[in-house]
Image (cartoon, rainbow, N blue to C red; front, top):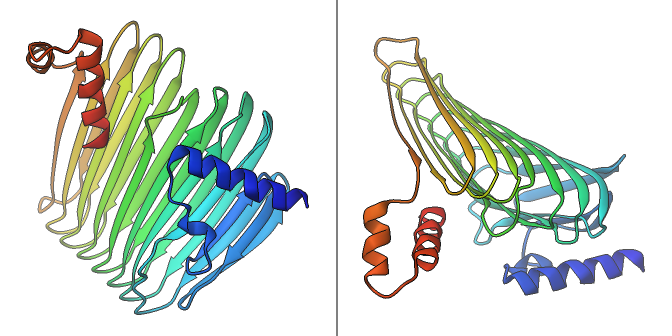
Length: 312
């Protein structure tokens, strides 16, 4: 009965946040976690999810067969409905060859006041396969989050990793995304975070272009308000012949926020090419004036610009 109540409570939070509740249907491959309990697992043809309840959390393996193209995303729902505590989740994801799959990972901690979430994912992508992994969050005021994702992309494979935390507080966030690329593999890592009050944010995106003609694009956007602190590190390593990587980081500061960004590019092959662009500072003055000329207040104009940065 407790699990049924938790399941219903998670559904209600999803509906209130306007999130996709399709994961609660039987057509969707999904695992639903609350605290250290598995509330539900659903498999579809070509997808096998096996969950295990461990101390303070859940470990799950996800296997995608060869030549699978799913019409719906695989949902990884992680929830915690108490005010305080600790949760760890471990995902081990493997795809076969020539498959296309999208994962939606939702972390739902709406009532957290003193809560630590520790998440670790490994993703192995088979030759010719493409994986999109989107990570979205609903947080209370007191979440400490440590998230690390390690990805291996096989020959001619592709990976897109997107992390978004823009509607709720980051409080304490340590985010790390690592990707290793084989021959002709491509990857894009995108992080978008809004930090307010005394939030502390650390972001690290790393791409190792090991394979011939591999490609990687790293994008980070951090908006810091009030007394928030953010440290953003983007690393790209050009190792394979004709490998190409690009780092793009944009940070906006308002109030007394303290933001640091470090692009690190290292070429170990004279046939590789790495580039970067970075900006850090206040909201674009020209855009602000243009919007205020249309009747918006300065705060309204600033909020509109920020929403555009986090959505774009």
